[in-house]
Amino acid sequence: MQKCHSIIVTGKVQDIGFRSIVEHIGRLFGMPGLVFNAKDGSVKILCCGEDSVIDNFTQTIKIRGEESGTEIEGIKEQVLPFDIELLHKFSKVSSDDEIDLGRKLDKGNFLLTDIKADTSKISDGINNLNIKFDAFSSRLERILEKLIER
Image 1 (cartoon, one colour):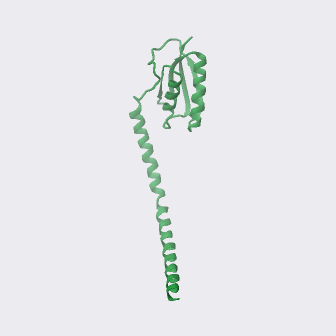
Image 2 (cartoon, one colour):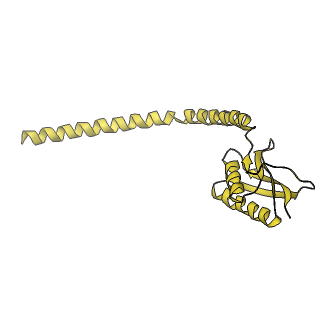
Image 3 (cartoon, helix red, strand yellow):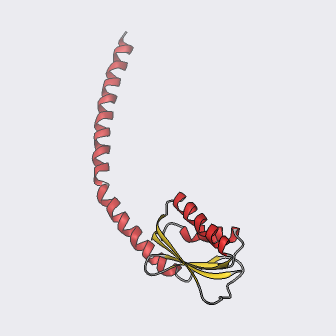
């Protein structure tokens, strides 16, 4: 008998494409459902299916998620005591994309600031390479002059 389930996946599961993985797997399983990012950092899934299908689904998202770099700490599954009329095609909820986008831009800006701070050493490295190149070029000119004299 088909039942509706609430699944909560915790760990490093946001900002890495995990919702798309869950959506793809849900569609492969042909089950109705939706997946979305929660404010607490978890990913929440509502879906309906036979118990065996849900078990296979959760195992598959764990395996595929970890293969793609997701660090899953836990998967909590709960059978809901009521039915939910879900869209037939498994989908990810994009209503939180604006919040995600802002958070990702903030994170990107922070990382770029760190990169900018680290680039000072690049200039030193380029100067050292230029000094070595100039020395090599001078030596090469002297060698060429001696060859021409012969």
